[in-house]
Length: 265
Image 1 (cartoon, rainbow, N blue to C red):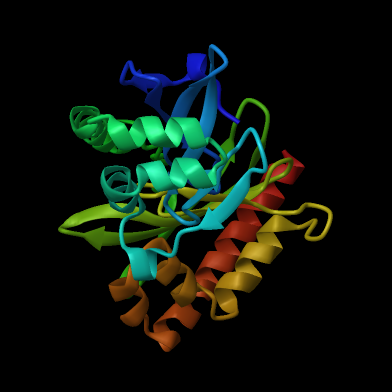
Image 2 (cartoon, rainbow, N blue to C red):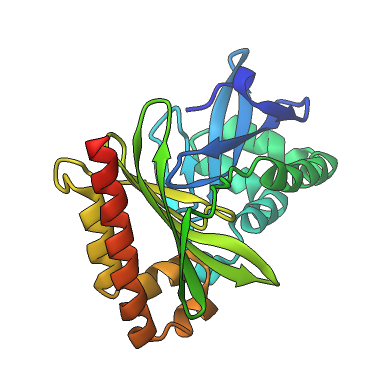
């Protein structure tokens, strides 16, 4: 549930909009709130989480909080879908959320200028708010056809471990496609660190050796599907199983050696 004081408010009427950028690590995107004045207080009527991977919206977050998922395959870009509904179905959606009087207000009030301002501001926020990470490419580089592996041992202020970067060329520039941070305390991996940067944490209880987990994954045929999920279908399609297998021997040997040397130092 969002508070009107915590977001950027667009509009001044009894129904207004709120904007903020939310980064959940495993997902991120613009959050658009619809606030309405109820008994002299601003109440969240609707909320639209225009996330990269699991976009969804809420009817009546402060009441029954009905949550519905958005399917990007059928509806396209979630933010475009939301902004279109504001122009065409906002009163009906407010009514379903349980606020009949505010639905009537939205029906009788010209909110087109406010929605245009909201659209411009939201699209700017979707760019400026995006969280990405830029790692070093690694100390040891292993070529594997359309991709390269960069391997290093990372020392952070509160964690450490082997990092395996999957690199590839996009529009003539080398970028990070995937990264596996096989840390001792909080192991995790990134889909598209330079793009959508979906960060997934590994359950250390279920998989106590994160480096072994990552190497088993890469050796077990999961690299292609992971590249596809990160948005790099062309790189996935051009993987050569024989070359990849040979490269992974070097990657595994190098990563395990780095981990052993670090544990002995």
